[in-house]
Length: 532
Ligand code: N01
Image 1 (tube, rainbow, N blue to C red):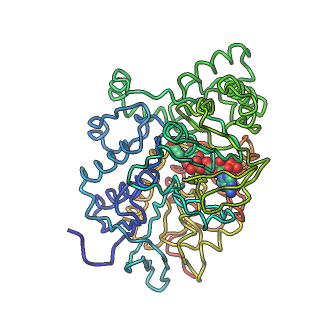
Image 2: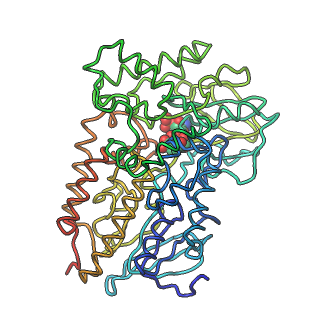
Image 3: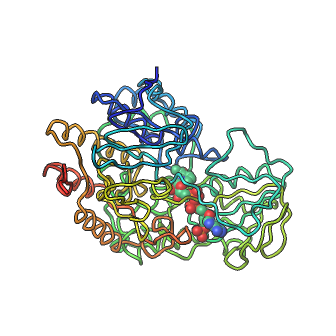
């Protein structure tokens, strides 16, 4: 039964993978906690993103919780890469297995959170109610606030308007329809091949081409599953040693020190089997522009081999560093452009001029029945800045982050006491396997609260100096890589007017080591029970 009281030790915002594990951990600590969730069900990103082909591009055996040995042994994934319905089924299974549903308040959106300095309590206002708590934990995800560009005339469109990130729960059928899709990121790249199979005509409006690697997805290899399960915890530990926290291929070798024929042979092998791990095939792909170019050229050649029409292949070929934008993983994406009913429109040459009741104007007028926006997210900060969060001395998070988000470890923000973020800016988050990164943060936050209680500390907050120094480090590391010179949602370039700042911490092992060191030094960089 849901408790009637509105006062809790902890309010958690968001019932995705982070939120529900956080609820479990806090309950095990004996604390009262509630999750407030805007949707009518759990799942977070895996609830909202139901577009055709939605699938995780981290292998299923890695994209799962590791906190419970029985859970990880008993659950069986049907495919190498899980599709959205199966991931949603898994998170529901976890919620039931650990009896978490009664701790979730659905259909309530957090509008406001204000820290009451006198009582050191958070006052939280939702779309329907009010709550009070000692701590607030934002488990709001890195890619949860849709980006809906202000296309001229969009409001006049009278056909079917869909967005990949808020896809309806009912199945959509595009048979006989003229469909336009705007955007060619991961969501579009996964959905285009399936929509093309149904639609009468599919018009793909591309601003920037993307690199994509074949997933070579298929049914779960039972021998592989058995082998991993026999040493699951070692498997997880090994993966955590990789810079991106995923199973590596030949992580240590450098392209710059390898015979080029050998490199090509290896890339060919990786193309056939590695998916996202293709980027980790050599250690210098993210670091050395020349080595990166070897790999980028390899993929560019693949595109021209796969796509029949040379003009279309050219438009589909990226000219920036591979990995600069989040690498995509597909099933038959480039092949889809060989279909007669699929047409590619290059927005770089012919931007969208206007959308009318049943048409879209770019290089010419396209008569359409359905318009799909696959235009991404206000990534990493959007979910936090869209809530009115007030900390000490009236500090507003939105204002504090106006010229670029700053956070200490991606866990805490100066001026915002007893507030934690799971996989916040400044942590490996989106440049890691999200599942272990979520568990790492949830474990850290829970341990921190337990430590505070054991040491009679009431209030924790990041010091401004620690936060500033941390973001300098995040940027210094990023500047050693190829990630910073490409326009991407990693650095806010996908949203007009958003501060341009590179936000993920690159390097899971270094991050993990630093996190542990900070704890060993009694949470160095955090201030406890600050006296004004
Ligand atoms: O969004 P995106 P996404 N006019 O930002 C274009 C994760 N994910 O939803 O590149 C015209 O990548 C934009 O163009 P440009 C994954 O981390 C994971 O596809 O900005 N076009 C781009 O082509 C991924 O990276 C999985 O020039 C406009 C597209 O819209 C992240 O989510 C599956 C435009 C947006 O691409 C986001 O992916 C799916 C405009 N005004 C997603 N504005 C997994 O497999 C934007 N675009 C786990």
